[in-house]
Image 1 (cartoon, rainbow over the protein chains, first blue to last red):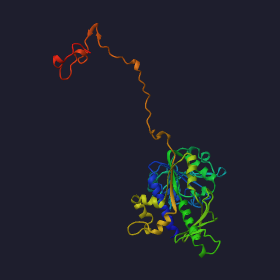
Image 2 (image 1 turned 180 degrees about the vertical axis):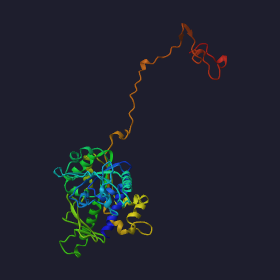
Image 3 (image 1 turned 90 degrees about the horizontal axis):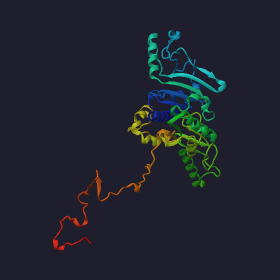
Image 4 (image 1 turned 135 degrees about the vertical axis):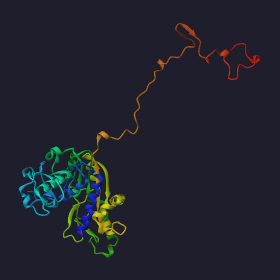
Length: 68
Length: 348
């Protein structure tokens, strides 16, 4: 099994949890979030997302995104 | 360079002079980026709006319309650079306490179980972020499953000790899909700091994790004001919600399904390495009802009960008692007074 396959399984599990617990206009806080994780909440129609990132983790948002 | 997944914006969307240079598929920065850096406080704030990639518009007006559409359909977001298992969120995110409906940790929970102090700090931070009734949930490697696999490995070694080299206890679990290696051989599951490496097939390098001792997780959560709801291995989670999750499976892992739409055994095994966890911050206003309802204390004062006299006086006139309350000598049975010769001359 490749990493991408394992990642697909992981993403599937994340989306499953989000679909079950998210509701419209919810205030969601993500710990150790990545930009990919924040994207997953778009379809859930939440109201606001607070992302708490830790740059010592290689997958965190700030390590990947560049803001101008 | 702008991340293709985010647009920076203010409440008022205004096109920038860069519109003319926009290329296909590249999103454009809207005026008013609110990126702020506060490195001395270890805190950075960025206000962004999550959105899908923006196709190149044919004109500035079209671009503005599309940006508005995206903005309207998306949620607002803000990010803070903070290590939640070492820093206090109440200090850094003062306005964000007791407001979240959901706090999720979809990865890296295991990092906090290096020490009890880190785990405690994380859970107190979660509790302070959540509003009453809110949920703390996420996904983490299933330490119970991993530890059980390791124990079976050690047991198998002891059962076949004569066929193996002496003094070499296997410290790894090896399958087609992955390899799990424990750094130190220990018979007991320590509460914190038990490290192992997880490497999936075709991975270049392994990831280092700490086992999460679930009883300690539950205890520390309770101490932080979070009630345990469920910790469920992903295979059980999948089985329990299969019908509901069928669409997601097809979307995310179509090549891992058999003709009947179920996960292949190899994928199922890999899925079983992870677990969901769910906790809830109790809401005092919707506390469960008392099991036995309390009844008001009813006391009867018999002294206040008045026995009616045989004769009543109403408006100064004596009133005969109601029918049925006559003198004994005149009472009749339901069959009548009976024969005269059987009557006594006077009441006994």
